[in-house]
Image (cartoon, helix red, strand yellow):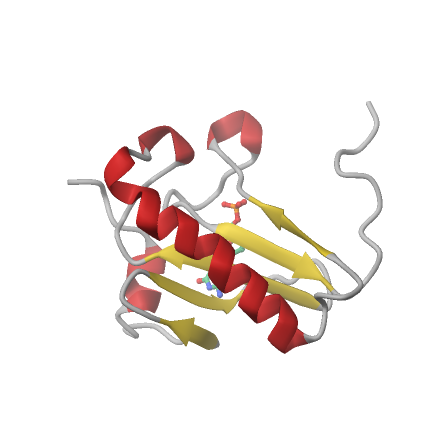
Length: 117
Ligand code: DGP
């Protein structure tokens, strides 16, 4: 059994969060530290620590992350101008919370995907 993080408490509504969507597979809520006018996290309800831990059993939930992201982007009014979906994995990926999550970031021009080294 994977270890729970603060995101499990958000799913169970044990700590406050601005939850904007929830279904049987995923939950979406606003990032506590937004990097753009729209910054939403979409997570599976099941604890999956990282992309490394995804299995074929998780394909429905992983697919739902994308369909829900596209729906929320439309509802947030950022779909036409475009946006970015980010999934960080592990230490080099900059992952801080080990419950897999998709960042939906938009509402401004985001620039280059990676800083130039
Ligand atoms: P990452 O670096 O990809 O693991 O991003 C983790 C994100 O989670 C980061 O943008 C901040 C956000 N975050 C961390 N703790 C909380 C929390 O308690 N509530 C909310 N809403 N977001 C959080």
